[in-house]
Image 1 (cartoon, rainbow, N blue to C red):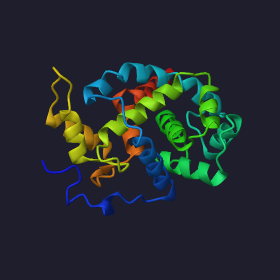
Image 2: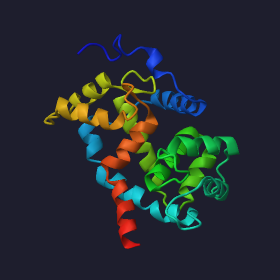
Image 3: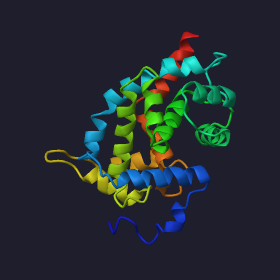
Image 4: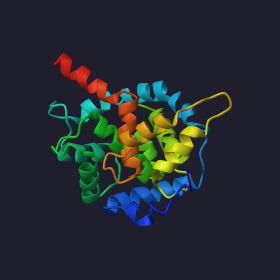
Length: 228
């Protein structure tokens, strides 16, 4: 299998494309020095139901900040959201976050994009004010859920460079606890689901989008549309 970072996976491939991505990578690298409580990929999967339940409770918060009720949060609504939650980001930083998470590039952030953005805010904002703001959303367990997502990424990123490579994903899947069995084919499928820009390296944002899909967050949007 080779090392965790093979010669074909040069550092050049993991150079952040934007200043925001650089900040996310640096924040993740700082967090990775603390280690992870995850023992296997299966232990992550076992947490899916609890994570799903916690994230779905964010729907009320999402609807609160979707001021015009069109099912998406626009840039101004996001800025209003940050102001109400007293999250101290500059307008430029908020715009960068919006652009990074609006993967459909339709100037409207849907629910799963909003979840990803909140988790990125949690990672980037390591002072107490952000944690207080997240708790003030009326979901005291949200902070713990975001920490679980960060912890899962730390488990996958074996060389602690802020990115997950294909080899690292295979190693993580195979690193099972006693009595557990996982498939290399599953590892490759999961990696392909995360690496949506197909550059062979997965950053935390890509991981989060894949994770919302794995736990079924996208389904709740479909349910909402059916009720309209």
